[in-house]
Image 1 (tube, helix red, strand yellow):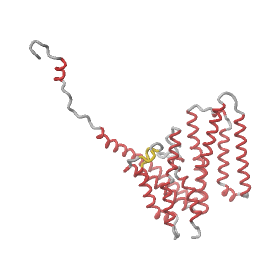
Image 2: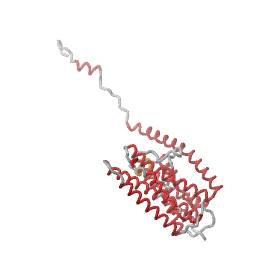
Image 3: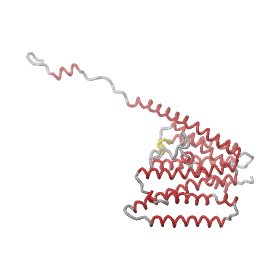
Length: 341
């Protein structure tokens, strides 16, 4: 400062505290660490899922070894009960959190299971006729009468409602009715084709497509963990990746021919071609059953449909892709596969 003047305080502070030359850590430097942490978490999740999966496969193997087709049919019937219970339960739990007043309709639980029994009798009509003296026409008449009774009962119950908020109750009841019927159509109805397949074509043609879906699902997870960078359907299923989808498809097709020989066996013409076609379907179409299930869970704030299987969730979580495969396998075999060959 010039002689006789006080030095500028700001200048003193500036000299004592010169601008920092340190470089802020780059955000990109943390990216590899975050990626490695995410990959480690996914691998840990895979290990957690492996144990229950092995136990399920082992239990299924023992069941089929000692009970055969009858054991599989019994297992399918139990699965259908679980599929229906879990899928409708997710919607009911969500509406309960919102303060649903559907409890005012006392007949709803009765109607819910009446619809289930009606669908089960319809889808299992061939099985029922094999063990009873009922004919196909009698089964049709029984199913029609049950459907008509549910229609009349539902309308009478709605007509008996009165007071404020009746319109809201109508919407809630009709929403649950739609949920129940969609569950019956998409889950119970499609899974009933397993019974038709095992009765007409044997255990091998149920097990082979089931293993294809398992391989596809497993390899999609593995390829997604190791190579996944591009999201496939981020809004519905954020964990699914393009790399996982493609890698799983190639793996499923590659294993189809040797796998079908182990499951079906025999010197069957064009067996490899049949296997490849089913593998392509299991790779391109079956995963969309899982995508739809993810949308349902996301819409209703649920992580899983159930907690029956540790690391996997519920029955729907494990068989959402399988049920999409069941009708295609039966219809394909019916049209393009000859048992006598």
